[in-house]
Every structure is written in structure tokens, then in C-alpha cells.
Image (cartoon, rainbow, N blue to C red; front, side):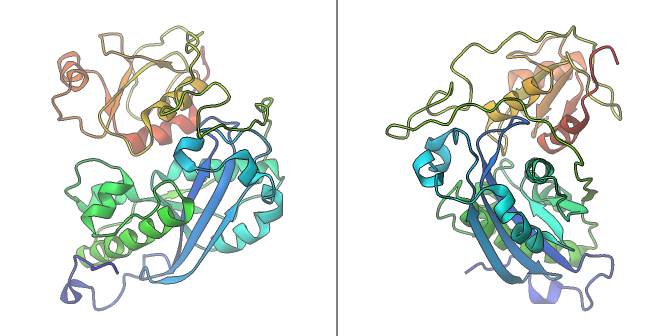
Length: 331
């Protein structure tokens, strides 16, 4: 049982009226991070205005394609073969999300995956706002060593039982969100809420063929223990338009470097950047457009060079937001 690190005396006598009346804490496991990847399992914990659990729900989803990195999520083609398709669970999923703020760890990713699945099913997800627990932990100034879910869980004394299992990850997130929500209310911290705009149309690229895994190893171009394709990453086809400017969108061809721990596996973030038309750089130079790091004051060589060169820096959550609207080359 979670022991809150805020005391009863620190709770507000009346809950802030500006705070939402209900939350849907969500976790989805997917075949990868690209635009045409699919959800293979989903879990929702419904919470009331004060973060108390009302109920929870979990389902497998047949992605109709190779399930990707089985060594991480453990869901093989055999396991998923008899699972419902997303359109079959869309109505129940929607009922769990309706009229609530979607809460997730790196929420922009979960929201984008959910929105795309609903667009494929020619429906809309009933979500209008989302809250990222990474952003909330920053607003609260939590002393975390990094922004992984396991670090947030350790801070609040929540025990992870099955990492990368949607139901357990959602449970862990719900149990860490409750004391975070109370601490925010007690301290008058404004919740970092963001608008969600459902997709209204969608077009997939041809999906990889469905295959079987042997011994939990790699399949479909992925190497075990890593999300990075075993084949050489293709060169970025767009010229470098220069440095990222704060308040403006990313542009295809920009050189993006990553440094330090991230809540999402680094290779997956790189795959998303490549899929958006960005150039993933393995080192940082004066030509680097942007450094993505959750710890800009660290002593890593990339962080040090970024300070020397004046390279723009954003954190993982902000980068996830920027990936939503990457400007076309020449735009």
C-alpha cells in the first residue's frame, strides 16, 4: 500500500475548483514508436477528483502485424492472435476515457498512439485534455535522478511488479499520481494540462508482416535488447535548415542529439525523430540543431558542448510535443 509523502495537515481544506473532476490514468504497450505502429495492450485506472481509484480495466489488442520487441513487453504473436482488434474495444476504451483528463507518463506518446488507433477505426477518442506526469513531477520539483517511471515509483514507495505490462504500469502511475495531485493542490501548483485534438483522418504505410518469435528474440529488423533496427539507419534526405528556435516548430532535416536518461527507450525516441524527417546525430557539433536531455546541467560531453556552442536544449516531454508538428523541408 502506498504511503503518501504529504501529510493530512498539508492537504487543502477545500479542493481547488480549477482542478478536473476525474482522471483516466492510461498506459499502452505498442509495437514501436513510429506513426504506423500499433497498440497491443491498454490499461486504464479511473480516478476521482482527489486521485482515489474508482475502477480499472485492461485488454490485449491484436495489432494485425508483428508485435515488435517481445523481449520488452512479452507479448508474442501467439498471445495476441486471439485478442480483439482495436475497433472491437474502441467503445469500451472510450467509455473509460470520456469526460476525464488523460494522465500518462510521457503523455504525448500515449495520446498520439490512442488518437491514431481511433482515426484508423474512423472514430474519435473522447479526450480533450491530457496531463504528463513527467511535467507534473517537474512542476513539483521532485528530487528524481531521472524521469523514468521506476524513479517516480521509488520516490513514492510504490513497488513495480511487472514493468512494461500495461496494467501494472497504469497501477504504478495511479499510485504515484495520487500523492502528486495532493501535493499540487496543497501547494497551489497549477496542473500542466494540455489540449488534445483528435485526428479526423489517417493513412497507414504498409504494415510489416506478422511473424513468430523464437525464444523472445528479435524479429522484423530489430535486434534483441534494443529498439534500433539492425540495418543501418538511412541517411536523412533533407538539408539541415539550421538551429531550432524557441517557440517555432522543428523542421525536417534538423540535426537532433540525445543525452542522458529518458523515460522512453532512447532508440525509440530516435526512431520517432527519424520517422519525422529529422537527422539523428550521434555526437554534438556546431551544426547540431537541438539537444534533447532531461538534465541540461549534467557533465556529459554533449551537455558540455551544448553550453559551449549555445546549442538549444529541450527536455524529453517538450521534444514529444514538438514532434507532433514537424514542418516539412522547404516550408
